[in-house]
Image (cartoon, rainbow, N blue to C red; front, top):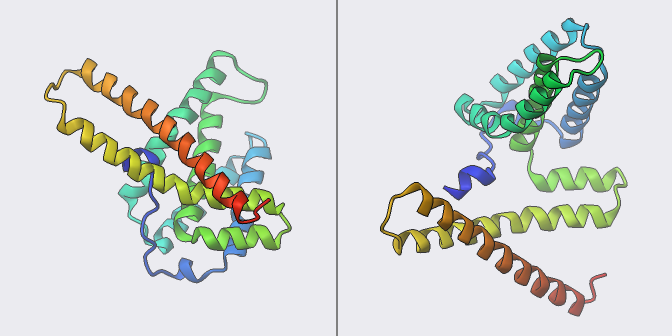
Length: 204
């Protein structure tokens, strides 16, 4: 399913974490990510402490463990690719497991924040922090039309599958390539129409 690759947010359950202000959650998440990236690899205590803290947050958030593992599995190939390159070409003071642990902590932090905080609240925090309005608007449009493109891709996939009777792997890959190319064309045309409509309403 296309939804599995795009990664719709899990419906936020009622939990104590849902009542925490978005600004506080973003601030703590940014602090964890920055410290995790900058702390020396020899500070094992930080990585252990951050992992325990995130495990407690997972319990408080009441997000399904399987859901979190799927999201980590979806993003981990990119992380493991970087770790593998680092293993082949080691950098001073770094190792593949060090890169993997840092990346896993950062990814889990982002996943927890994004799935326990409404995106509109995140945008309000960015606006309050005086992030350029053009960037905030662009993020809002990207978030809105990501799901529009996802629905469009799913309709195209179902239409194509209903007209394809072969189950050969080669045919499936050709079908996927066709869907992606058509989605790119339709997405570009829709973006142009939206931009023209916004300009006609005075948006700059």
